[in-house]
Image (cartoon, rainbow, N blue to C red):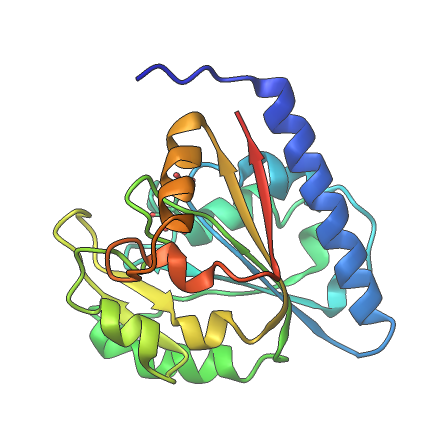
Length: 226
Ligand SMILES: O=C1O[C@H](COP(=O)(O)O)[C@@H](O)[C@H](O)[C@H]1O
């Protein structure tokens, strides 16, 4: 099915989302010393991260981390770490403190305990979590075909190691439990295909079929453009 890209609408959406996130961070920074911002990887967030980076804020008091990560070297093209450093930790946001979801361990199973401790030590609830969604209804690295999906949706750990036949690299993901420890949650989507997936998610209730369902509550702010 054809998806028509409309860059202007996507750029406007990214700017709207960036402004909304910045207002939220500023509001929390007026009441507390440090705030936590959780962002997603993938391709969709690039213009949002760039727009957010250009907004003036007391960024040195903002801790940034990821909803999920591929267990690859931080200079790998597929690294969300690299993605955030390239597109968010620039301009004003270069002053933010970034907390990676990877370490030197051989794989996410070996590395998860240390990463989880480090991420749990940030200021929670997070001010803002910005989620993305794949066409299969996954969010973060909570994939419908993953053996670790139940753990990701139900465990009270901070992170889980995740594998799925549909993706080539091992992953590490914040759990639903940790992602829900947030004052504000946004879902940032583009394209007709994702709109259809979201509509399907809204029409049913099996979180194992479409994991994004586990996050669809009245407080989730939807940001979509064609
Ligand atoms: O694998 C991932 O995919 C989703 C969506 O990515 P996109 O490229 O379609 O924007 C993302 O939200 C998730 O964090 C990422 O690891």
